[in-house]
Image (tube, rainbow over all chains, first blue to last red; front, side, top):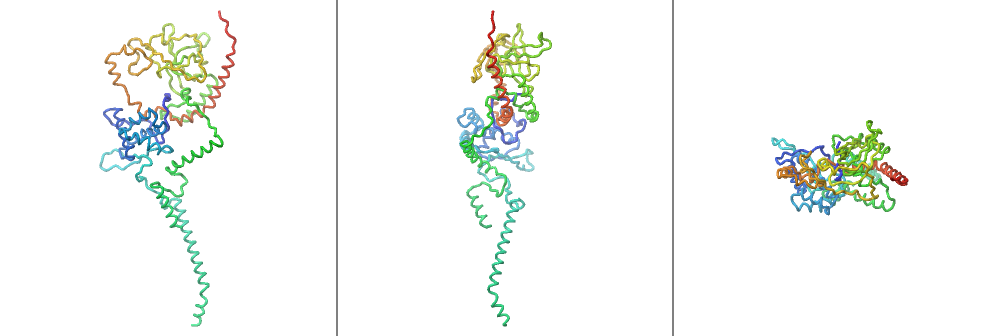
Length: 196
Length: 306
């Protein structure tokens, strides 16, 4: 029963967080682990979508989320946040991207800033699980399947029925029209026929 | 009409660039939800102009004053129902006894029931050198030197045998725990048993006592040189090169950047707000009551001296 640390205030993550960290295999220990994660976070901010091993992606995801949420919370005038950004982003032009591009993009989000997908691994390759990690609102085409055109979805069923009904009504009105036209003109032809 | 609708959706799709459109969805999509937020904010601004919405305002310093109300951040030990029940029990106890605000470095006097003491109660004055644990198990350690003998007593904050907790001097020290007082000269942890309570003016921030203690020579109970203590004056005089080297080796300067480690050690702000919103009104009324009672007590007839 330890007391919670009250000296720091952090905003809640919108992703599922593991109860403990993964020790990514590294000869340099915890510092080397953080260096690995810094590289991943830098790549994520730079490319906005990266493909990598699942464990490393899952570890790096929390750091990226917290970095962005801290940047949103404190802004670029906050010294500690600037130090954090300087540490986590190995390429310094990305610090500008974080505060000028990502912060305005995510300011009003109420979902997580990143997304993670399970990716297939090649067979017979290395057995580690793979994944795709991306920032939300990136310019690439979406990775998820677009199911909005699925025939069995309720709104599509309703739309289909509406279309059918519309067609039926149109046909009925056409038929009525034809019937009305035929009622007006047929008498002379019938008479002629009887004459013949 | 069919053709028309398709044409329309195409037009909208072109306008929205790569945004996905789902016709007829009861749930807002992620992007539309994100886009909807500024509209809500505008609405809130409108609301603020017309009818002011009252919300429970929890002061920001509550997490320092009542840290034991925050649960243990270790996920395996979390249990929302138990935490809630514990909070209720803590409030019940606080209705019975005044548990004042204090910090590590404050000087307290605790009166507790003691079956072996002369009047069945014992009063101990000392400096709080550590606070730990949370919920009903919250406890603190008081230290004093009595008859040239260092004494430390661990009190549980919500222990029913505690009768009275007085804060004689409300202040903080430079470090989060003062275990190094055990290895300091005895005058730094000697406090008068009959000390009078010092009052602080209302609204002043808690003062930080920048006193630096003098350690006695080795052997020590802990390797203080490795702990980056700010409240120790003369640590350098007892260090050899091997101590400096080994303490350099165990430093972890990267830990201040380890965001997830910090996250796992804290309770997130949203959760804190929820917890304190739950107990705030009760705690606040208790505070006000205590203040009123204190004002009544100030009109006591002065003591006849000599």
